[in-house]
Amino acid sequence: MDVQRIYRRQAVESFAGLKRSALYDAIARGRFPKPVRVTERCVGWLESDLLAWQAARIAERDEPKSRDAGAWREPPRTTHNARRHSR
Image (cartoon, rainbow, N blue to C red; front, top):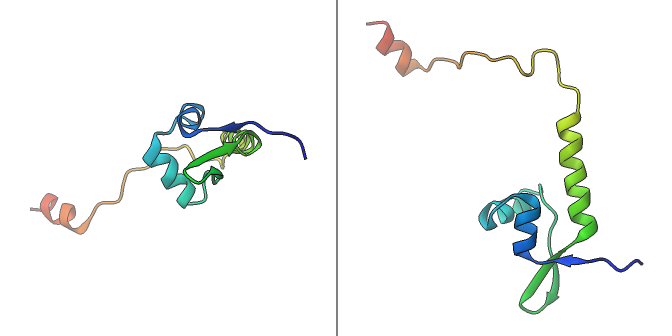
């Protein structure tokens, strides 16, 4: 196994562009790599996990979209708005 660098939370926040709460929310949703325990009170993220996450975000950005995926659509009117506008 190759030696990997382990990044602490502050560096990961900078790398990912996410603040602490958003970072842990993404982890809970399975959208960001889980940290590894370094000591009893310290966690960090493996460089390979961060680079894989970054590559996946880039791949999502570069995926071809369906023809009308970017087209703007008028939001549906709610019953409340429909009643208000029909008076």
